[in-house]
Each structure stands twice: as C-alpha cells, then as structure tokens.
Image 1 (cartoon, rainbow, N blue to C red):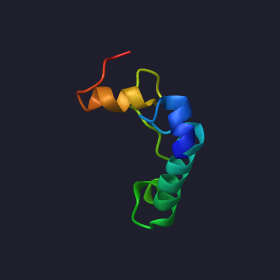
Image 2 (cartoon, rainbow, N blue to C red):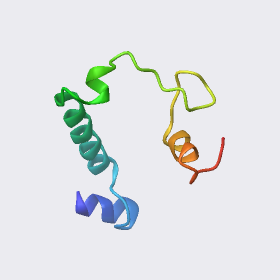
Image 3 (cartoon, one colour):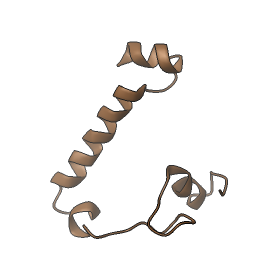
Image 4 (cartoon, rainbow, N blue to C red):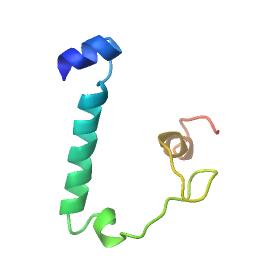
Amino acid sequence: MLKEAEVFEGGIHLGPVGGRIVAEVFIGLLQADPQSYVTRQPDFTPSLGPVPGEFHMIDLLTFAGVGEKR
C-alpha cells in the first residue's frame, strides 16, 4: 500500500487499493456494530446533497462548512 501511495499519489494519499481496504474496514466495523447507524437504520437514504438519494463526500464537507457547494 505504501508503494502504491508513493507511485500514484506521491506518498501524500492512499492509492486506489489502499483506499479501498481502509473503506472496507470502516464499512465492516459499522456493519458488525449492533449500535451503529448502519445497523439500526438500514433503510437510511442521505439527504444532504442537491440530488435526493445521491450523496458525495463534497456534500458532507459542504455541510461541515469546509467544502464548496456544487
């Protein structure tokens, strides 16, 4: 993963495989936790973005006040 990050992102960010592994670990933890929002509200649909049911990271960053609106 470190070599991939070096080659693809200059060592600043994770590459595609490293990012996927980290994301899948987070998803697995949320799915395994009986108290997580993912488990308790399985039919949840995000509503922060400009398109209902569609959500992107920039929508979360905009909501937090650190991203630009699309």
